[in-house]
Image 1 (tube, rainbow, N blue to C red):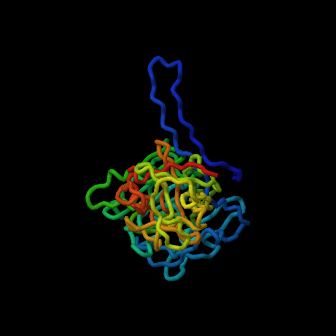
Image 2 (image 1 turned 120 degrees about the horizontal axis):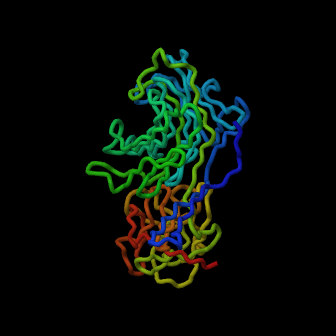
Image 3 (image 1 turned 90 degrees about the vertical axis):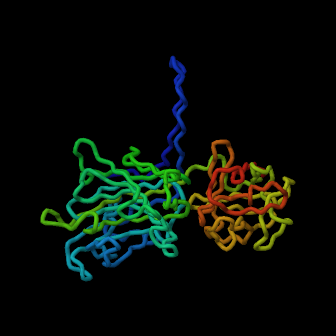
Length: 422
């Protein structure tokens, strides 16, 4: 298989009403515009290991919470680049580590994680009873809060006894394991996923996640549809995983019909960030809060680490000027021109009400902000570390009202006008 390695982010333009139609037709909503921020094209030499700067190879044969039968290894027997632009994950029937099967499980944990965006991979999956290939995501706070409180987004799962069907599912508190919120997609005409590459993706926004196969949407999860005892946990960074499990609670075990070895070929994995309309890296902006009409301001024009950030009547001083600098993951850091310090969440907090301050630029998630345009021309700023929005405390309007992070709620206290000043 040959493939182009030069590509651009997918752009979907709005459909306009035809001027010759007799009846008025509403203008279609413009689809999100996505900018590529991370990818692996798997262009390594034949037999080479997956890129260690992007992937961690998890190992072990403990059943992985699902009574799986494989032992995941970091050997080239189970994972390698094929020299033709693909990652190969190979499941084999062999005795290893006290298990009867081997395979591989790759994750970007500790290497890359992102809050919101479009995540996609082009994959040809294996087949057969007992095979369980997956492309999925976990919240990067899983080490501190556990599962399912961390959240899980299964972009694509297949159980081998369903060769024409894949599943997309969300797992969180109150809807996990057997009771995740999901849907399935079936290829038309009896086609099977093992016979060709297909593109599996999600589009993840603050209050919604959408699932696609080859550009066809088949599942949507809205924050508003969760009920009592169910918690929305898709407001913080998630990392990526690729694996082929053998056996387990869902697919069942291999039987006499299962052929080994089996391979999952991954053409690429790409991650996009929604375009930040009009926000230019390096430009200095005044940020004016829509609810108060006041500017984002460093208290008393301070320069020390920990100085309070507040709102104040616009005055044109450097204490109210912020340089937007793009990061490689599609987020921005905002550097105050008066102090040279970054807009920062105090102590890297994640709780509603955590105060915002200035601090020496350190590149941590507490200083990374996703800047997304609202429909009314304002912007919301979502902190990458917490998944919370930049917010004026108690929707205040008085000079000196502090700024904090708070769950994204779409109120004017979280809407900011960005005006370029230099």
